[in-house]
Image (cartoon, rainbow, N blue to C red; front, side, top):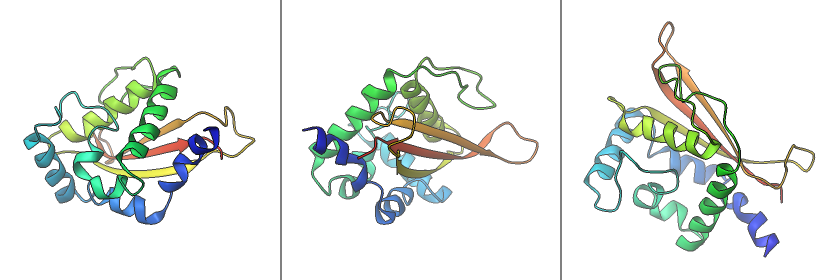
Length: 166
């Protein structure tokens, strides 16, 4: 069971997966289409959605390569681990809210991207920890915003899911 849990991130580390996922969030026209799909979906509320909920609607083919349950298990495990990690960072320069956990920060950043006008594009990456990294058996998240010069309004979110070492 532990080996199966640890293998999760590898499937999502391929350049094919990353390119396919990014095609839903970048460029702006693609992100706008994704927002329209989510707003019209009866299976999600775009204003309150969480990381892991929108991917099955926007990218079912990409995330279901090993079956929907595999995606749900991996997202669920990441969410549980990120909910246990305190956060000290604000959502963005134009939103000083400091969510209590890394999972809450992730959710807030994703909602900001999809609910802004215009929406903010995302670049998704998946990496894996090395054995010597801090807490090598736990997920982590790296969230970095790009800003235009002199602006506090973000223009792009770099979202990196860091999976446990295998």
